[in-house]
Image (cartoon, rainbow, N blue to C red; front, side, top):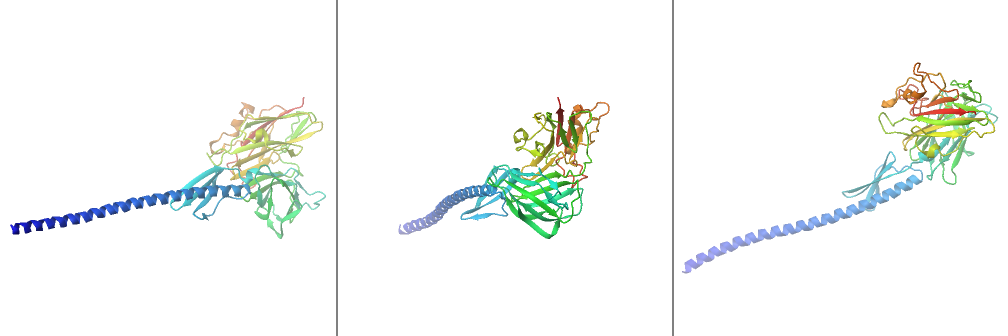
Length: 434
């Protein structure tokens, strides 16, 4: 009996040992699971905290970017800007500003649209002149102006001057509002970007005049000048200015209609003459098959363009009509100005007196045999109602002219471009002398 008891006891001890071992293992599993739950909870807390910090960083980045833009500066960052518990970066894409806030592994992206300083800068050549009593040697360009047209504060950092025809000359001095903003005795070749003292425009100082741009030698007369202003936020504005000292090679005269004349893209009318400007079409894209580019139009009377742009400062597409009433008691002159712009990336402005960029057609002229760039309609399609069915020549009343604008290609620097199709803006002008 005793031996049997011992045997049973030993068996029970073995079972207890096994049970004890299994208990230890199970306890280990329970402890490990408990640690996993704690670990997962802590990670969720960390992730949540990082997400909050990333949100705060993105908000700080948006505020920082808007402050830069409102100061006329570029919001782009070269890398991350570090904060106490996160960072942010800013990039621009068309009109969109993209802000990315980061903290740990968390990342938050915020986007907003804006207007860049180049959209607010009116670079004008209303009083453009060369020579005269103030410049007997003919070495200076005068009469350019820089105007602010919106709530931003543009900062102009660089200027560039080009001409057509091209001739050798160097810029030596630039004055703005009576102050020298750049000067070099040796000079910088025409066509090179010049880093000037920054010119600031704001609500109280919304117009600055470039009193003079002095060159090393006398300037070739009768040229078309292209002036490029680069702003602190990287946007650019280009304007073309016509030196009309010499007769334009693009002169056409409508002799059949008394009371008006058009010469080199400028329309001269007698007193009490009404002039109508009708947009026939406007087709221009950012690259072949790309998005549409905005085109705006204005009419200048006696050399003065009254802002803003016509038709509510909106893009024109065709069908828009502007009538200049015939209340003028003296003879008057009219020019058409156009601006094409693609957000803050690119813009180009010219006027009808720039015969390199604008073709003026009268009755009997041949339309340019040009295909539309990137699959756009050719100019012949745009003016088809005004073409003779048999000859293909322009068929207009003696009181009408057509202006064809090329805004997508700067023909002074790229004269052989196949993208020049002269239907970026097409305007029918009708003179009513009754």
